[in-house]
Image 1 (cartoon, helix red, strand yellow):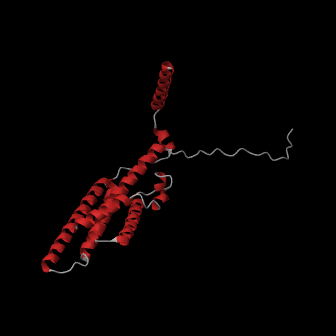
Image 2 (spheres, each protein chain N blue to C red):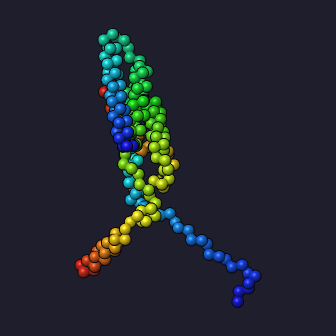
Image 3 (cartoon, chains in turn red, blue):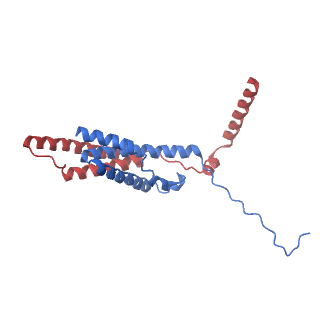
Length: 102
Length: 111
């Protein structure tokens, strides 16, 4: 559910950004046709692009893969006993193969 | 023979140390850096669109950096579970600067 919200926010933010880019291009072509000097872009387009940045960054943070806890106690308590045994076996085979090669 | 009056030093209570898993630390850091690079490049696009030049662009980059840190702290409730030092995120200001400058110059040239 949170990820879906993130995708929607990304889509809305990028759409707003593309709309503001097209508005700037249109504004500049209008200025060129009317022979007016370019001073700054209109304030509504600037506000739209900054809002697009905020929405898209919120979406990107929600879309990113979920963080995992770094404390090892929580992982070790969930791990099964079989996995420990396999781990020891792997160590045993690697040491035996190295001794046979030498 | 120990004098019963003498106070014997007691052994300190067993404290379980907090051991961190380096694989998960690296996974979390990579996820955070990917987010930061994407947001910095998008901020560079917006800076180029706004037509910012020399020092104002870097001021805008500082704004983008604090925006990222604030949004990241809001969306993840307890960052202390996921990073060793979550507060260092606020000082790592140069990590997304390259992508920001790249997209800033690109967009200010094509617009």
